[in-house]
Image (tube, rainbow over all chains, first blue to last red; front, side):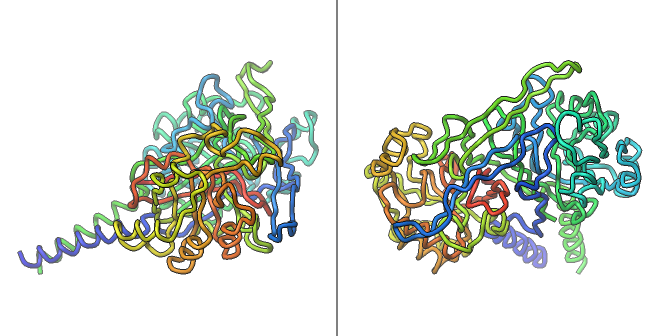
Length: 260
Length: 260
């Protein structure tokens, strides 16, 4: 009984101690590409532009630098809010933060996808992950590593074309998530969000954007142009994905990190 | 010994269990104002503008909405990166994420500041907090509640003027952090970052921006136009502040949340 009391005492002390300490522990991995004039944008979208307003010593004697910028909501590492492809669904400012923070899972399909730029991630790919790692926890955030992230921002390899404009759309070749796998993840695992290391959750050759529509009709957002997936394990990490809070926005710049 | 073994067993089981569960627990508080044409910007800065690109049913049969936007880096809820006021210090993309995530402290000075729009937060205000709550943990993130957050985005009450342009600068009246208190927090408590519910960490009437210079010379970033500080306790919460990752940026839109 004495041992029991001492041990309970130790456990309680540890908990009290924990309240004063960093609760968020672990290595932080930045899964975000920086925004610059090199950032990858959809071939028809307005690209990121920085305009210098000030840079240097002021008359008052202090140093000062500041810029303006212009961008499409959808470019670089960004989020697609449900309203991007589903009428009356959540705009980016209304996505519950609980859906953007949670247990992460990485499904690596690069062995197949790097051989086939039109590759569609399948239910079988998800089943293979579960055979090895156990069931995907309910309400997880699922990240797909296609391997194309390593080509960013080289458009020719990353998107399949370095042309721009509406004529370039038909030349887009990069992997994406099949609509069947998207529906399976929503129906069977009640996922919070999905992300991947390509420019779109639908593959480059998609004409109907069926995966976007399937996800977003169910208020599931998508993270696109996610960086550094190489640095994540298959499981055992948390995702924190905080988008710019644009009122009524269909998406926007995203800072996404993992704690592993 | 048997009791010991069982208890050690229980503790180990609990830890393993924890790895599969949500590590980030607690209520999420969004400390971010949404960006819109109402967002508060410095009187000389380019304001937020959203341009609709698409909104409605496409010829292909699916719904689609998307926008472009233009903004100054410094407006709405945003971060000042050290390079904003200190040459060769960190730009926003280079601020270590460890400095933007950590134990939060809220120092409420609204009783004094609401009576005096030129109020300067003092070392005494910090000492008062510590007398009541104990020492500020080293490497904390300090948020000051001036009470002016409740006026956002009403410029006349929030900034002291609803005029715009360089002539309006002299009419800015809102509280800020004194340079003495900033230096004390850096020197004595090795703070990671500071934030507040006004448009600038220097008070409205500042001419030399000495608090910005003091902080940023030491690579301490500042969060401005922080929202919802009413919803935080004085201590016992964590801050996660993730800015848009603008290469070389002097600051940018910030999504800042607390876990309490």
